[in-house]
Amino acid sequence: MKNKKGIRIAIISTICLLSACGSNSMTAQQSDTLVSSGVHTAASYASATAAEPANTAHASASPVSVHPTSSTAMKTVSHPEAIDVLVNKQNKLPEKYTPADLVYADVRFTFKEKIEKRKMRKEAAVALKQMFAAADQDHVPLAGVSAYRSHARQKAIFEAYVRRDGEAKARTYSAYPGTSEHETGLAIDVSGSNGRCAATGCFAGTKEAKWLAQNAASYGFIIRYPKGKESITGYTYEPWHLRYVGKTIAGEISRKQLTLEEYKAQQATSS
Image (cartoon, rainbow, N blue to C red; front, side, top):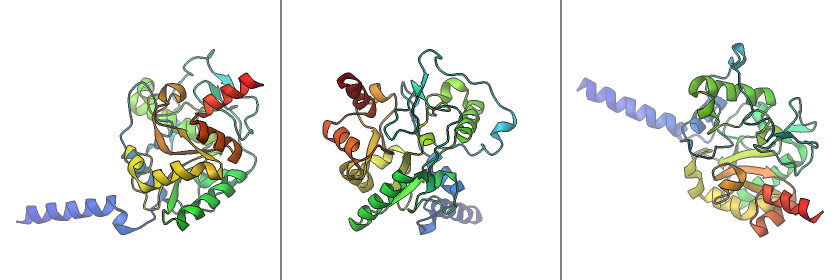
């Protein structure tokens, strides 16, 4: 009887922990743990916004050697500050690039701490606040999960994954330093205000994902890694990963059902 009672208590405690005991907010550590519970696709495409591993606090203590997939295939973007900058596996940010106009986004997040990943570039942060307010009016409250990430932080995260899983596997779910959109200050992962399904596949079936798909472009955001475009973006479908490009570009990308890669290619052809 004592064993059965102990098991029941353990189960109840686990359920309470996973549901944040009914709370709509959590610590940054809990948020990362929640995101880390998602299943990453270890197929031919990577997850651009892989969750931060729990052991990155001292990741720089014993650096590992990692290398770009191909030094000839990857080029450094010349205008990293451009709102429509293309950052992907072939186009990286300058190593020392830091957006000059980072501010704390004035919206709810799935954690309480005022830390780096609350930041976005000012124009994107203003648009995000407007979008969240509109979602609130439609009774679809949203929350930020992770926005800006410094190059040093992305490097620490990637190296921690390399230590844990080896570089080949790490590349299947984590962006190489300099190629993560989070480093631009223009990208953010979004979830519902309860934080459930944050940066995981189950988010696709939520009312929040549907609202974002229908309305994000009106505020200058695109679903950066859309379904069915994996061979173009190089990443699996991520309905939670939003990228700010401004209303004009977002509207065109949404109407024509393009990726940012396709939009930039069309612009290059027409110019």
